[in-house]
Amino acid sequence: MVVSVPLRWLASLASVVLACTTAFVVLAAGPAQAATLQQVTSFGSNPGALSMYSYRPDGLPSGAPLVVALHGCTQDANTYFTNSGWRQLADQRGFALVLPQQSTANNANKCFTWFDNADTARGSGEAASIAAMVDHAVASYGTAPSKVYVTGLSAGGAMSAVMLAAYPDKFAAGSVVAGIAYRCATTVSSAYSCMNPGVDKTPQAWGDLVRAAYPGYSGPRPRVAIWQGQSDTTVAPANGVELRDQFTNVLGVTQTPSASGSLDANTTWQEFGAGAVRLTKITGMGHGTPVDPGTGPTQCGTAGAYFLDTVCSAYHDAAFFGLGGGGSTTTTSSTSTPPSTTSTTTPPTSTTTAACITSSNYDHVQAGRAYTSGGYALAVGSNQNLGLYNTFYTATLKQSSPGYWEKC
Image 1: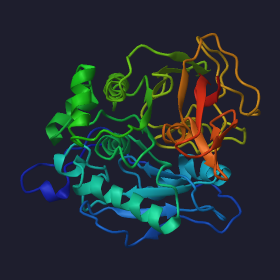
Image 2 (image 1 turned 120 degrees about the horizontal axis):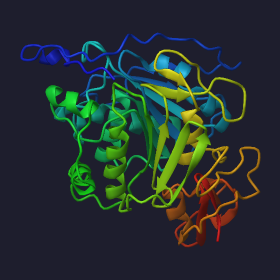
Image 3 (image 1 turned 120 degrees about the vertical axis):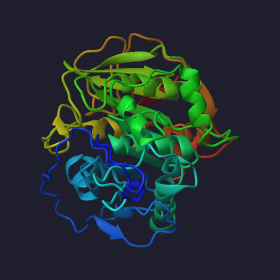
């Protein structure tokens, strides 16, 4: 992550640049189809002066999910679209993408301004611009307002946390990659200590910052996935733990893992509150988005500057969000094993007893435990039919492993 003062501040502040080299774009061949990344020149109120880009796979049906993907510093929308793996997942699983883009007119290093109160408050600045893009996509593309998700890298990851805090009513879940807890910094100078070595607060103190972003809000809160390289010298590994503390507190769950396991020898995950929050740590990884180039079922993305060849975070985030079913593949597991990507009917093995959750099918979908198809609610992962998607039909589900829900 690079932090630089927005150019509109230059009259009073000097430019701040943290150690990052300029990211380069590694172009990968796209699928044989007509859909391309398109700029949207008019999308409503734009107080943050951002640009909007969108991608809709061919034949995208009405009611499809929407993922907002936020690039890192020195990058742009096309860089993240091309290399992160999200285009590949959108084509495979049938959802739309919105990619906001920062400009050098706002920030010399094209960082989203996660450290300025004017850009991180509900109804203000860059946060409001991103919210307007979501509203435009839902209204113009027919995407489902209950199936909107946000993800981002570095400054984009920190801005993803901003959107989850300031606009919990717009997002069902989100992912923060090498990011910073909401309102850790409120000035350029305080951004330094937040990034490295990190700022330690109690879960309650972190949670209070999020609750203050939308006072009086009592609706459902988005689930949160967190990715953190353990050799990241730009955004210190401690930030992953602080993000965990912040969002477990907001979601009302403890910091004691409900499940844990691994994706490979270097990648371990812990879940909190039966899938409310997930923290994934990658040993030896520096600063960037985890990708895994290749043609395997769990592979995606293109390696390059700030796109690091480890695991495909977009694939695992799509499963965490409940996009198209399928769970995480693992080689070893300490308390539970995610389901195989080659089967959606055989439940995974588990050495823990998952809690059963009884709720309406509407609530299951809102919480990400189920998704809708043809007017019915289906459990994420197992694809078991729960009945009609409404508030009158109820079902009892348990999460056997991350991204895999089944009837109790």
